[in-house]
Length: 201
Length: 201
DNA sequence: CGATAAGATGAGTAAATGCTCAGGTTCTAC
DNA sequence: GTAGAACCTGAGCATTTACTCATCTTATCG
Image (cartoon, rainbow over all chains, first blue to last red; front, side, top):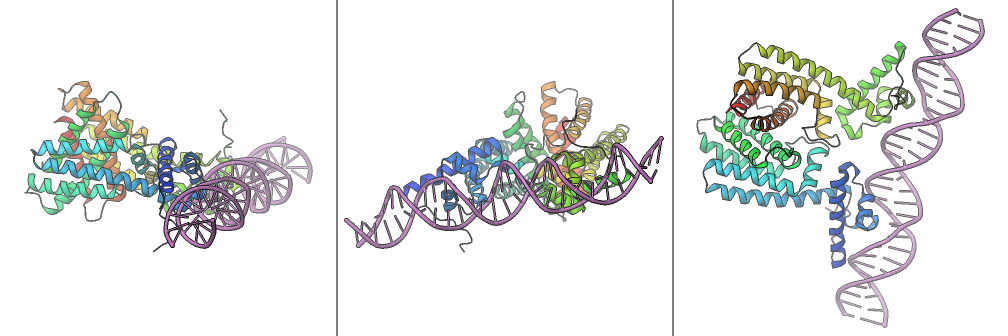
């Protein structure tokens, strides 16, 4: 096991420090991007020594991993909530709710989302946020099977593959870089509409 | 002008070296990604001294810029060809031709495309390959205005915004990371269909 | 040929980065 | 109170990176 030198904080003092470090990391990430997110810089920003940082994080990536894990958890929670709410509603309303939930979640985790999308080594958007994509794909498969039962399995796979990319990409763009003259709600409507049409037509 | 220390090669010898450097850079980029694409590594791979490299390229970015410029030029040429061919054909055939051309071009410039999408600092896919996106947007606007003249200007803007993201994202994914069990031509059909529908419906 | 420009070299520099460790402080439990 | 654990510090090491320059070689042309 312990391939990492990471220790778990046990006293309140150190638990607070871990939080400080993660907050500082988010700030650095947000303002300067992943490439500039060095351990020295994070320690500096957190007003903590590098040594302390390395007591609780085995290496640089573990810090980012923790940020990603936390963001993913929250997004997943909001997404599954949206899926539950969607199940009781007419198809289009449900899909729209999902898209809106995803956009909102990504906005609330801008720093991490941006880093994942723009600057992470190895990983087109397919490999980004894999947990989220899996959950989304599961819902999409169910939805498509219901709305378009005439499609073959291979056909379904192809459409889901495209729908995943389109959903993530569109939601990311709406959340992170929408030009102010375009209305957010309307863009969400359009995406939901295209997805519903593209999956079943 | 000369904010860069770059010299232009005048003898055959040095022109060949510049090519060697660019080829080596592509190889490094392809095998290890943008972050590992250091000047020392490129010089090593090209079997050329760092000093020589810096005689013809002001800094690291200029090397990548040259790769990008060359790739962009070729992709642009293929794209404008496809647009010309599209103009004589029925709408759906034209759109399909464009999508196919883009996928093919991106495949032929895998290393650069991958670097641009995955690892370049600052730039979601909207800002990637801006020249290409501009040309594509121009065509799309024309197409949509013809096929769906009833749409307001704002409505058109919103749809083009989404269509650009979807087109680039889908083409990149089809070109760079399509799972082998999904048929490329069929995916292209689906994308073209969704675009046509999404733009006018 | 001989002079000058173009080309090529690679050890070396300065800065940045990831990470360590010897040494000190604070907390906890008996 | 005191031993021992948990905690914290920051100078500094090893490595990597972008980039320079003194020095040498090759081409051009009158």
